[in-house]
Image 1 (cartoon, helix red, strand yellow):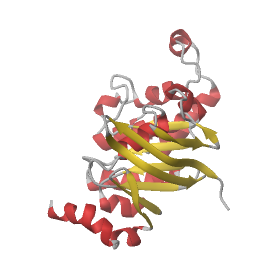
Image 2 (cartoon, rainbow, N blue to C red):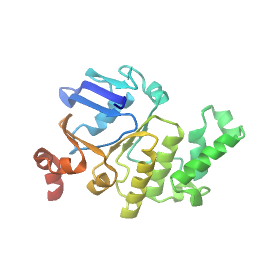
Image 3 (spheres, rainbow, N blue to C red):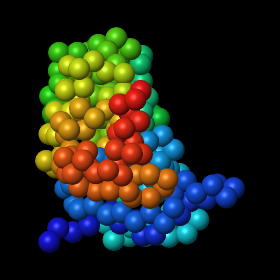
Length: 249
């Protein structure tokens, strides 16, 4: 039986009486790739906020690698091994792709060592490996501002991986991407899933089908349904509250 990397036990988050999460219980195994879907307002962003410590539960507990994250500040949770990618890429546009990854790999975040210390051989090899993983070797010395939106998404995922998190939280990575870019991001996440635990929040059902092993559907702050893609797509409750509305749009 696989160990649990994340366990959320009966978590409620209330904002002035509105329950963004409502007695939510969720868990995932070490090494699992889990996709979270659900209509707008289902609690997906709050779900990630609770894991990362940005929002504290009104009640309930969050455990990561067996450790209670409740009341732990965001920076400690990040240092403990939780990495988050937001919807909009957060990269240094005026730096090259290589320099972005080099900064992310740098364990000493003080200004002067970051700017003036010579890069070690191990760091150079690490950056080279990341460039290969995210498929940007040919553009390593391009300013990040010149990358396409999909390439920027892959660069930020690479920067996240450079920090060696045990759990990657990836929020809507293919919003606004072309079909080819979407497939590239999907292949990257599948490759990373061989060595990382990953949670992906997404609306694009074709992309979900490409990467999903287990899908969890959130609705009104709680888990509505969970299973493989076929089970979820054919669940009458999911069709009623989510998939049916997508087809109408």
